[in-house]
Image (tube, rainbow, N blue to C red; front, side, top):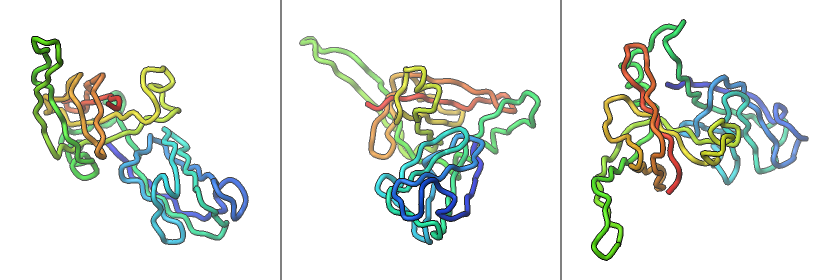
Length: 208
C-alpha cells in the first residue's frame, strides 16, 4: 500500500547556506518513502536522480541532498509515495481489491525468472533452465543504511524488497526479479495477512 505526500517550500527549508551545494531537505513523511514515484522539482524543473540529487529513504525524515548550488529563494516541490503496511488488529481491514488497485496504479513492471531446472552435466558444469513472466506489477523498496535489514547485516544498502499480490506462485526463494535492467535473486519471502485473510507477498532480494 502507498500514501502520496507532497512538499512545497524553498531552499530556505534546507540545511546549509544560500548558494551552497549538497544542501539537505528533510521530509515529514511518516512511512518509508519509495524511489519509484518520487519526483523532485526546483524552480519548476525536474531534477535527475544521482546527477542532481540523492535520496536516503527512511520510515520518517527522508533526506534529499541537492548536489548543485541551491539558493534560499528557489522553489522546491517534492512528490513522493510512502509505503503503508498495516495489520487488521485495531484498524480498519484492508481489502484485496484495494491492494490490487494500488499495485496496478502505482506499481512498477518487473520480470520474474523462475528456475525450472538446476543441475550439473556429466562434466560437472552447472546447467539451468528458466522461464520468464514479464510485465508483472509490484511495489519496490530500496533498502538504505537506516533499514533494520541492513543494520542486521543480512542485506546491504541498495538491495531491494518487492511487494506482490497474493495470487503469484513464482515468488519463491532462488527465483530472480529484473528491475531497471538489473537482476535480483529472491533470498527470503514473507506472507502478510491483510483484511480479508488473503496475503501480500514480500520478496527480499539481493543483486545478482
